[in-house]
Image (cartoon, rainbow, N blue to C red; front, side):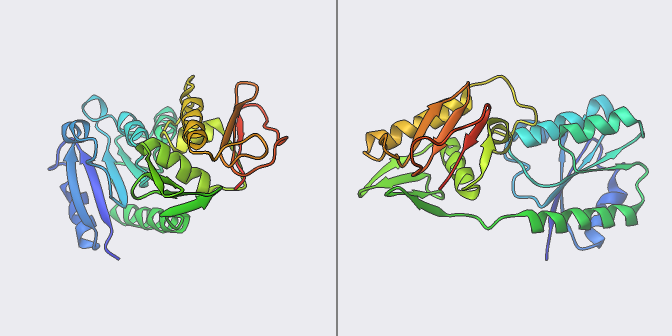
Length: 249
């Protein structure tokens, strides 16, 4: 399988030996500078793995990792770092990196670690849900549309992603923090009501089209101890613990 890798670097010449190794091992490798990454929000999309050459103030791996996760880029990230301090490693992993190697890089070790991350990434990927039906409604995730009785409602990208996450995790109790991480891309949950706002918006869409009722509505949201309960075709009386969402399809 041809894997596509992105290498974000400060100086392409100082990291040329790594690029040559990866290409010799069969990877398709694209490179980008910190400036290119910063100015192009979609640059890191659609890569199987990302390598960041940490170069201190000129190219800060922690900042790039955090930005990648903020952009909802889920590809594994490997950081190449010039020094081996515990606090540096903690900061890099906390920012969202998956692995860390000390420079100068042992090329065989880098290859083995990349292969392990790629294999793990393939195993963890879920089969993509293209559409989902519930409570007399159907969601088309590719078109970001909600259909009810022959009429369609256009969803925002975030609303579609939120519904997709619900569908992929039906039957599970999901915390607000989990939604902020997986739908919004936050590594640490901020003080925000954005989850509440989006779920209430979905409730309004359902209500406006006759698919929400108090006897077991198809799409219902309620505030409970500064938490939201989003229930899909769930009888009334289901309870929600603090800071958690009860999702049952």
